[in-house]
Length: 367
Ligand code: ATP
Image (cartoon, rainbow, N blue to C red; front, side):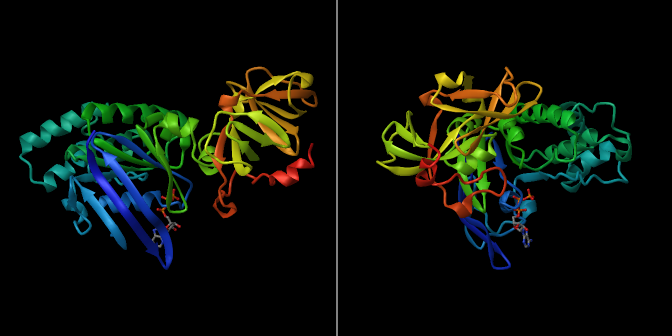
């Protein structure tokens, strides 16, 4: 796929505070890209730069090979769908969808053709005359999507468009949006703080934190190979521990040594170690290097989530088999499931989830 949009070394500050800190990003033609990160990380600001609503302090925005820093929004071949649908309450469904086409002064026949196409695309044929006040939240969002797409933009920007819908409807709309994007073969740039939503729909996910891009990759890459503890924590639940890379393929956690598959971290290097809850197996305590006591067991629908106290660390374990609360268990995992990462500076740890594990010297005491 060819590159459609490039953000090159973008910096944006508000009130002296750096909101985007040297962002570099290529977006390909016909791609579904999601900007994912916690509230305030700069996702919407990035989207607004692409839409032309904010001009960066420095850096360049390129669209189809042309620099567009100064090009006003209405001259860009993009359109936006917001979380609040912003439909026109005095216009019916047909006129809402037709709005941008009338502004462009298209002939009535063409307007009618496009509105019908859009109604079909979003599953609202027959709703033409309905007042938007008499639509459900999901239907209103469909009208907003149809209205944005009717002018045939090359890129659709979507800023948390499903945020106001309930969970079931949100999941339905996620599948719908992906279908629409594939059917129309246009670029979607989607903003969300919901990691599951990002993994479900995207070709590529851009994980942001503190105005910086942490990682760009396919959902599978981001989930299986997070580049640092922040990404690992934000994408799904994780056990994140301090470790010491003894040498290639050998890591020490809590004073015990484990074979792993990572190389290139040098010798005796402090690292972050990530082990996913679903990759840990519970066995008899005597059959494992690590043993602990089951602190809690919660049924989560598909699996049980157990918290296990072992070596000053509360391990999260997901399994379809429940262990008994208070019982002693062993924890095992295979080398492939131990993910080694460069240590993140403490100030870059996110507010939620991660408790920076103690340094290796401290964990020696836990032996
Ligand atoms: P959310 O998910 O909460 O919308 P976000 O990742 O989209 O968050 P942005 O909306 O890009 O974050 O905002 C990033 C930071 O910039 C926030 O701290 C926000 O308060 C600040 N900010 C955004 N717009 C402005 C503005 N016009 N003036 C001053 N500060 C702003």
